[in-house]
Image (cartoon, rainbow, N blue to C red):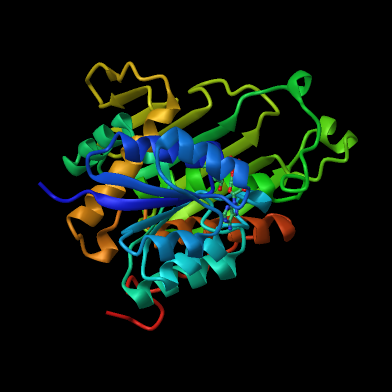
Length: 359
Ligand SMILES: NC(=O)c1ccc[n+]([C@@H]2O[C@H](COP(=O)([O-])OP(=O)(O)OC[C@H]3O[C@@H](n4cnc5c(N)ncnc54)[C@H](O)[C@@H]3O)[C@@H](O)[C@H]2O)c1
């Protein structure tokens, strides 16, 4: 049996503690240390998990040179502005990094992180967990068996259910920014769409917010309507909103991919997959899973598996480069919106071995 990979986590909020539980329950990992610059949070997590606490990443890594992985579960403005510094420090200290999403809220930083990891030949992964589910696995299986054929369209509706009655007022400074929902959240649906349909070549976007937010001087553009074309010719539509309305068909997370040989629909991310084929009754697979939280251990296990197996870096699942792709699409959508819905071609991705072709 392989030796478990040694992990240190930086950022012990809700998500850092969630990741810690995943490592604790996974035979491929050994949780070695935790870190938070808020002492009480680091200490509380350390006590709960039975590992030492640190208050800076450098102190943690210096005290544990044996660490294989630093997991960055910090947050920040638009839920991503505190990822770059610890991720770059950990990479600089020779550690593989799993970073929460969005890889960064700043596109230049996301590009630099991906390039730096490539230059160091380290595994930079991102927690794009939304397609680490049984329905997604089965859907991929259908595709691999040519059950979809030529892709025609995909539709993704995802976000948060809500209503004006449930509106809680504008968020704090981290959230009260025009593109906070777009940057913090759309990385997930774009990752799912790209996972199934490949790279996006063209994007057009509209964004808005309901009157209840406007009256509260809430800066967040909480509604996104994004139309796109994929490299393979498929067309796609992404609708996201942050608790302004209830989602109807398909619930809070639905994805439909239609092709010339069949169509599949995933409902509520982890719950249900339906496959439609002409002349046959729909094939419904209900997983019995209701908790979206099931995606975390699955995604983290995949990262541990990839490192344990020493997969070529370009085969790392949900890599930093995959995360960068989603941010390029988000920034293209923002550019489109700012230009009245103009057609925008997202920035090309760097070669898989980095901008300078490191080996
Ligand atoms: N993948 C998912 O499904 C999913 C779901 C929710 C949140 N997230 C992401 O998880 C991340 C964490 O979310 P959260 O709600 O736990 O955030 P949080 O703000 O509650 O916790 C982040 C912690 O990081 C600490 N921190 C920040 N920078 C630090 C640094 N440089 N060194 C040490 N400690 C530092 C903060 O003190 C805080 O305790 C966010 O990026 C968010 O986008 C992902």
